[in-house]
Figure 1 (cartoon, rainbow, N blue to C red):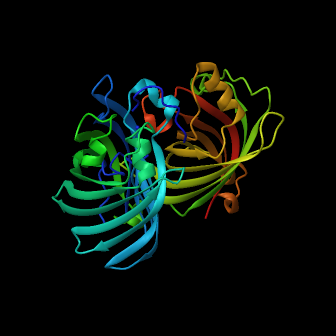
Figure 2 (figure 1 turned 120 degrees about the horizontal axis):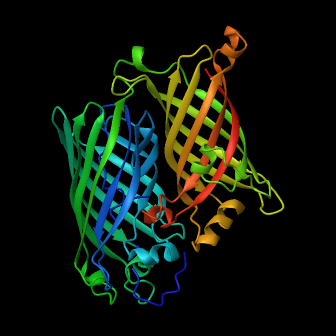
Figure 3 (figure 1 turned 30 degrees about the vertical axis):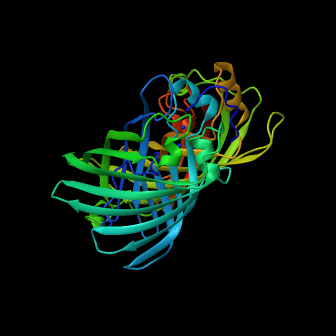
Length: 431
């Protein structure tokens, strides 16, 4: 990321405090959750306006090795009762005025590694080493103290962040001056409160206290940056009543899709215009069962990572797309069982597709590789169609593969309105 700074501007999926803004899953419970809410932060820069807001989707999951924690996630390469180590990805917001966020897109998904010492069931000490996509490094030393009641959970945290000179000069000196490396501090509380059954309120409030070197930057006008978050999330447990509530087995879904110039509303009203350039994609998704019901309704939930291959055409070279989402299915118990499905997640594309680039350029937006992901589907059971029990685990269906920026509501996806859509047919095998 190289900025051409002409104004005193002003900075992804991790919160300026590296993902500390969202409620965590209980470490003693294998569970999952999906939600959305509004993050608000003060802007520490000398600029018009005091705060900036982001609508942000949240994914939660705690498995044996893989975990998602709101706007961060990782994979533990090693873990024991006292220590864990693994890979980490975290969204870091760059809190600048809304009008500049699409141009500069400083909010990024940073990647690195994390080591955690589990002092007790309630206290953790962790060290993170992270980098943005241009190799600007920073590190966090954090202690967390978690406590909970019958229908609520809260975690206090305090951390020190060591910033490399390149990181500090870019995100706080705005590449207009050399600040050098420095250490700032953070503290706050995050938590969740049950509202009704699986529905929870999630929230966070915290502050960053900048070091003297950073505060001395000509671009900075405050020693402290405040941030808060309030939203709603649906949580479930993968372990409670597993024998009766878990869907039967995982699945593999193979799909082939064709780009469309129409949006979801037009497609659902049968007003579809296929991409005249006939750009295509193929995908494979894995579904891991999470729960068979929420609110006592027979809705099945799956954690579903996916890989998408965008094929070569006259208007684009081939490239890859990666997805992580939580998907829900509701089965209509007809003579031929039919399911409707919906998924919420995030998509990272290594390049911008021709159809997406065309859509956004027409609206005057700069594209973002990281976008919100939605999947709408309907499928029918092949075994019921052919009255063959040996095919009862096979489903044939239609899905809409959708990437978008949630109507310019968040810097995490580049403050974009629009994106891309693909109509696809798929086979899904449950095993």
